[in-house]
Length: 353
Ligand SMILES: NC(=O)C1=CN([C@@H]2O[C@H](COP(=O)(O)OP(=O)(O)OC[C@H]3O[C@@H](n4cnc5c(N)ncnc54)[C@H](OP(=O)(O)O)[C@@H]3O)[C@@H](O)[C@H]2O)C=CC1
Ligand SMILES: O=C(CO)COP(=O)(O)O
Image (cartoon, helix red, strand yellow):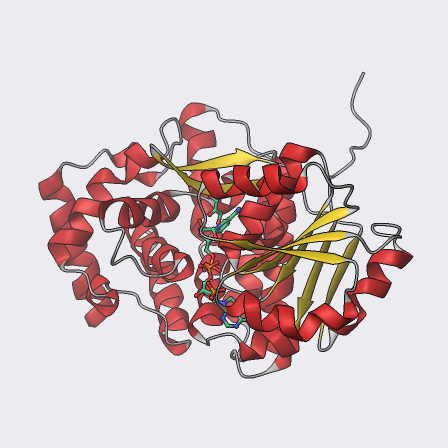
């Protein structure tokens, strides 16, 4: 029997606008996500504390949990802390780390999870994945898709610009991730989901080609929507494949090899995507991507985030080990260290010319 349709796990509410957080309690009540208002809200010890002071009066039934970091230990601790209480939902209110910890904790205790993104630096705000540091480095854990996603553009405007721009790198990198997926399909026959690929690629293209910047709401909306759609593309695919490729392996390698110096996720994947496009011979696309990232003040060369050429070469060399089993342009070319050095020299020359 052919399959005539399919259900896509997706949030019941996506609310992206100025002032969205003012209506959070009403929205959760209206949608029957939290009729009692009893919520476990995960926040960071930094920006989360200030948000707590502002939001607490509007969320009288909330209990606030400070999360130390983005490790699996913190996620398990949060799950242990909330499991005895009968919360309606877990709210992850913060950047990517807090949202991932909240997603994992909610999954562990079987509660719905509401993602309230306070920056736009990553596409994890609506994905069925929690990326957490563990004893072996970092893992991506499958979790349910958030039941609701709320992005208040007033809050986003208060976040450090760096952590808004970063999301441009993550969104645009989708173009390289999908190219890696198509390569794996051609070379290895890996199954590719056309809908997931289309959603991820179009999210990347919309951000790539938008003439605006992080200072205007129309651009912020397209960026936020692109990040949400990218998350849903991962739900369609069943894993992070449409939004994670060679660029992400390079990013994970930076994080693992240089943990104290690593730049932000979006900065690293954007740079990695420009390099990966160059490696696959898509020189015009690589240059267009680099020009766009530059226009937004994002890095396209390692020295722009404090790394030498040699450190970048080491990261690219190590990158395939970060996601064993994933096939990208890096595994396909299987370059030696010297070949990576030559490829990087060619990339840097092209970018600088
Ligand atoms: N699950 C998935 O599918 C994906 C997960 N990720 C993961 O997401 C993480 C990256 O997310 P990212 O958001 O960059 O990292 P963080 O969560 O560390 O947030 C980055 C910075 O933004 C600050 N911040 C956030 N919101 C505000 C605000 N409104 N005002 C002031 N400061 C703010 C945080 O401050 P403070 O710490 O003080 O709150 C922090 O310094 C990585 O761990 C990455 O692996 C990335 C892509 C996909
Ligand atoms: O960061 C991600 C998507 O942007 C998740 O990808 P990974 O599966 O490589 O952790």
